[in-house]
Image 1 (cartoon, rainbow, N blue to C red):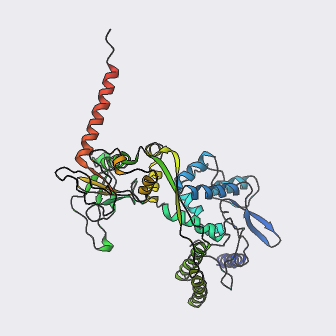
Image 2 (image 1 turned 90 degrees about the vertical axis):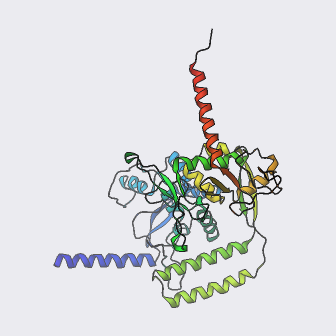
Image 3 (image 1 turned 45 degrees about the vertical axis):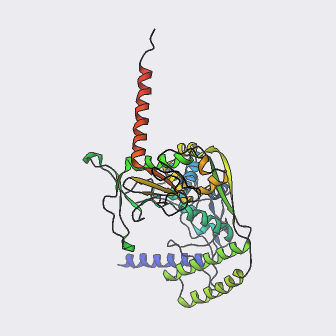
Length: 436
C-alpha cells in the first residue's frame, strides 16, 4: 500500500510538472513532431526546426499545396528514403542524441502512408502552438496560445494549407477498399453508392449498391446494384473517351486580397475556440469574451473591399489519358474529388458531371463539335444536337447540370466485347507462322 501511494504521488508530481512546462511553452518530452527537434536551453527543452529534416517538412507542405495529394507526398518521401518521426526518434536514441524511448528501440524502416502525411499536415503544431492530444491548444491566461516551438507557417500560410487539405481530405474507409468513395452516386436518388467487399472463397463478387441516406429519410433504391469489376472500367471509359486525348490542365486560384486571408484566419480562430469550449478546455465566459473580440475584428475586415479570386489553368504537357495510366487509384480518386467530378449510375446508363473539368475543356477552346465523342457518349452541348428519332433536339441532362457525359451500358458492353475480340485476334495473328 505504501509503494502504491508513493507511485501515485510520483505520477501526480509528474503530471503537475508537465502541466507547468506546457504553460511556459517548454517541451515536456515525448515523440518530437516530424521536422522539429528538441533543444535544451536555460529553462528546459523547447522545439525548433530540425536542420536535417526541417527542409523536408517545408518541401512536404510546398508539394502538397502545389498538388494536393497525400499519396503523392507519401510516395515522394518513401522514394527519398526519409524516415518517419518514430524512426527518427529511434535513430537518434541509438546514437545518444535523444532521450525519447519507444517500445521498439531499433529503426523499423517504416514507410510513409497517406494517413501519416495527413497527420503531419493537419497538426496545428506547424503554427508553433502547444496542442493537446484531443486537438485543443494550451492557452495563456489572456487567451493567447502557448508557443512551444518556432512556427513553421504563419496563420495565412496555415489557412492556405488547410484549404488544400480540405479539398482532398483522406479518410480510410473501414472494411472498404473502394476506389471511388466520394465520386460514385445513385442516379435515382443521388445518394452515395456503398461498396461491399467480395469473398472469392465463397463465390461472392465485390459490388456497389445504393444505400440511401438514412439521415435524410431516403430509402435504398431497389435493384441499384453494380458489380465492382464493371463499374470502375465503365467510368474510366466514359470519362477518358471524352477528355482522354486533351492536354491535362491544372488549376490554381490566386487571391490578391489580404482581406480574404484575414477573414480566413479569424474564422479559423473562432472554430478553434468553439472546439475547445465543446471539449471543456475553456469556460463559457472566456469563450464569449474572445469570440466577441474576434467578431468585432471580423466586421471591420468584412467592410473592406477587395478583388475576387482568379483561377488560372496551365498545361502539363501530358494528356489526361497518359496521366490516368501512370496514376494510382488513390491519386485518381483525390483528383476527381478535387475537381468535383461526380458519376451517377443508373440501371442502364451512366451520367458524369465533369464538375470543374469543364473549365479545362473551355480553356483549350474545345466545343462540342470538336470533341471526337463515341456514339454512346455526348457532352451536353450549348447548341442542339441530333438524336435518334428526335432531330436537332437538345437532350435533357440527367444530372441537372448544363454539361455532362452520358454513356449507355449496352453501348459500353458492346464496345468492351469488341475490344476483347480484337485483342484475341491480334494474339492469334502473332502465333500463326507466316506462309512461305
